[in-house]
Structures are given as C-alpha cells and as structure tokens.
Length: 355
Image (cartoon, rainbow, N blue to C red):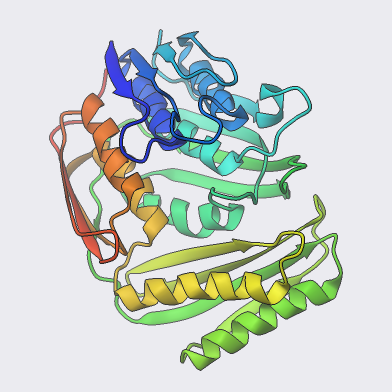
C-alpha cells in the first residue's frame, strides 16, 4: 500500500484528489494520513468526501475512514475504472447540503474516466462558482482545451449556477474514454495576444452590477493597451451571486481569471481583481497560468514521452502535486523556477501505466 503524507508541502485537498485518481488508474491501494492537517478545519470537508465516494464508485474501491473531518483514509481499488453514467452530488456529503466545488470534483474523476474505454455521462452537483476552485468558465475555456491536444475528449455544460453558501449548481460532463495512453504536451511559447473576452454575471441581482463589472474591466484593460469584449449578464438563475471571468487567448496558449462577488464587495473591486490577475499573467510571458500549471501535471504524467511547458510561476501546489505523482508513477519530473518568476516543468514518462 502506497503511503501519502496529506500534510506534505502545500498540504491541501489536491493531494487527496491526485492520489485518488492515480489509485484508480493504477489499481494501487493508498493510505493517506494527516489530511489537510494545517487547514483551519482539518480533515475531509464535504467536497473531499464527495470526491472519495465518487472515485470509489468508478473503481469499486474498498474505503476505510471516509467521514467528515477524517484525517486518515485507506482506498483500495477492486477493478479498473469503468465508463458509464454517474451522478455525484456534494450536498449528499453533509446534512443540510454544501456548496463544495464541482470543478475540483471533476478533476478527481476526469483522469480515470478519460482512460476508461467507452462513453461516460457525469452529472456533478454543488458549487459551480465558489472560492478557491476553478469556475465553470475556467474548466470549459481553459482546463479542458489544454487537455484536448493530449487526447482527453471531454465537454462540459452548465445546467445551473451554484454559489456559496447555497450551492445547488449542476454541470453535465460528457467524456469519451481512450483505449490508449495520452499524448505528450509541448507548450513553451505562447506567441502574440489574439483576444481578451469576458463574462460579467450578476445572477438574480440588479442588472447594474453586471454592467459596472464589465465597464470597469473594459476601462482597466484599455488603459493597459488591450481591447476587451466583456459581456454583462444578469438573468442566469441559481443565484444570487456575481462573478467576472476573463480569458486571454494567445497564439500558443490561454489564461483564465475569475473573481467572485461577495456581500459588501463593490462590483468595481471584483473587476479590478480579475484584471490584476490577467495583467500579471500577460506580463510573465508564459503560455500556462498559475492554476493550470499544477492542473496539467497529472495528465502529462499519464502521457507517454516527454512533456514540457512554461508556467507563469512555480506554486506550492505544483511542487506538492509532483510529490504525489511520483509516489505512484515511474516518471521523472523536473520543476525549475520560483514562486515569483516563470518556470519550466519537464515530465518524462516511459510507459502507459496500465494495470
């Protein structure tokens, strides 16, 4: 049984998600302790417990320790992940419901299903636009397109928005599994900026909130020499909630940036946060943004050959993810760069990691 220290490095829920995915894919049992030990509320939160149950269903795993607040877990797959129709609801993990992230839940179940021959239809229910997690737009426009050249065939559709603390959102994900391994990725140069597009959404809130976010973002980006098309939207259901998503698309890469509204936070401040993140990425010259940098590591480790990509900065999440991946797979991962400077990730994978 592989042992994973859940408090290693960044010490967050990503350790759990990566370990679960790799356990399912490789068939190797895993013991994880000190789960999220350094967090204000250590152990499994609802979204993490939902992830354990979801991946366990894919591979009929035997699980010990799957409970809210648990800091130790054992997970033993009993068969290879199977394509099919699945429904996973974060709200079922806690009495009274939860707005736990469906985007993070998707990142746990997608790799096993992408490598499971056949078609999968997955319904995910919970928070679609919540703090510290990828928004629906980020998944649709940044994460999945980055995986497509590697052979991950998946599409995501927003059925209903879900905001903190209510949740209740829903995504429909269609996945076409592969019979063979993923292809290596090369993303070292991004080329010229082509477009900047955005969505300013104020769901079940006054229309002026969306217009103000859109106008402020347009003004700030214009001052920086960028022409941006930001569309305001205020009738989207599932609310109340507000957010701004910006996408910068280049010849050889793209970055996505989400800022969420909150009670007492002016619309202009939401726009300023998203623009600040976009402009920081633009100044870096890298083709891969901060968050995508660590999200790409598991897929490239599952590909055959050598993958290389330049990332905006080397985060603790990225280095921690490398630790987990190398506990499961015979891959060589080299990460160069610092937390405040662009870096390079190289991953050499010699085989297809099949059972």
